[in-house]
Length: 244
Image (cartoon, rainbow, N blue to C red; front, side):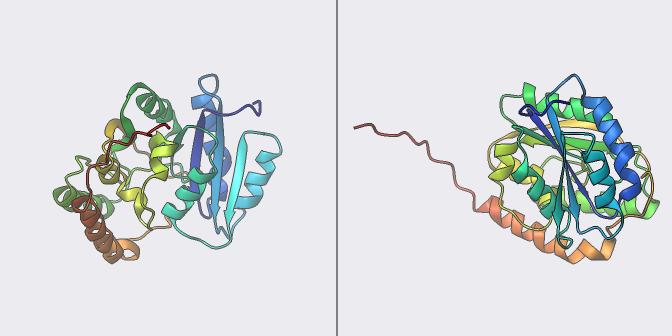
């Protein structure tokens, strides 16, 4: 792949996913080659396994693969933000690094952003989820509560498959957990959201880095904060520059 300016940046946050690195990069390549000039940015979020070494080995053979490393884990939202800030493409697409998000759906998400004149987010909506029954129940309850309070019209904000204009993301207020509230915040800024059904699948290997009690109470506080932000939003003034 040439090192020309990419139009699309694929951002993949990972922590301790060494065995999932090579298979996922191959799938991303198969989905995007010949369609867009693209780069792949892995954010190594404080991994303690061989994730960094696996990425370095592939980078030696691919000039469109980049690795950013957090000295210690900052979480998924921090990793996504680091990747978006470093991205060179006007459109950014994200997916989780554990293999549950199928890169075959990336073209549909990117195309939805390109086609929509006011689309600020194309959000994947999982069907046929492969999580445990308890985790699926947990997700349904959380999504129901969030949608009732924020009225964001989204049934699944936890799906890592998303695409958006880079400039839109950079207008979002940053906080830990931002990635779960993107639909509400994008609507707050006056943009439309496109939805793409994506088929879930089991992770390739390893174990999840996220648990119920890691985020339950923090999620409640974040929900209250986003509700406040929406309530305090004022219309954006029309601005014109007055020439001398």
